[in-house]
Image 1 (cartoon, helix red, strand yellow):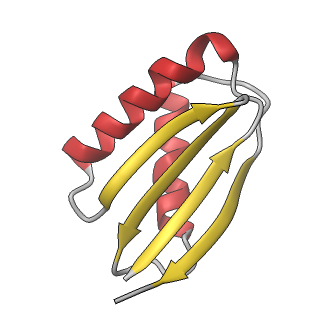
Image 2 (cartoon, rainbow, N blue to C red):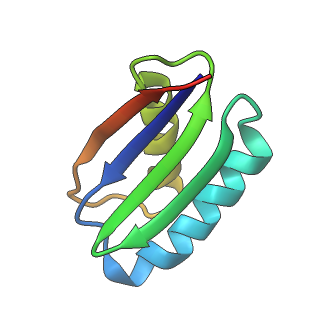
Image 3 (cartoon, rainbow, N blue to C red):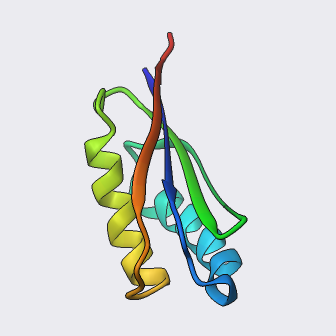
Length: 89
C-alpha cells in the first residue's frame, strides 16, 4: 500500500476551507480506489493525503486531485506538488 501526500500552494484564502471539505467528500463518493482520503487547508495550501495499492509514484492521485481543484476552486496560479509517497503493509 502507498500513503501519498500532495499539496497545492497559493490557493485563494476565500475558497480554501470549503474546497478542502468538498474535495474530501468528492473522493469519498467518486473514488472508491482511494482510501482514507483527507483534504485540509492550512496556510494557503490544500493538502491531500490518501492511501491506495496502485499508484507508487502518486501520479494518478495527482491527476485526480488536480481535476477536483479545478472543479472546486477554479482557475488560479498555484503549484501542485508531490510531497511524499510512503510504502506500508
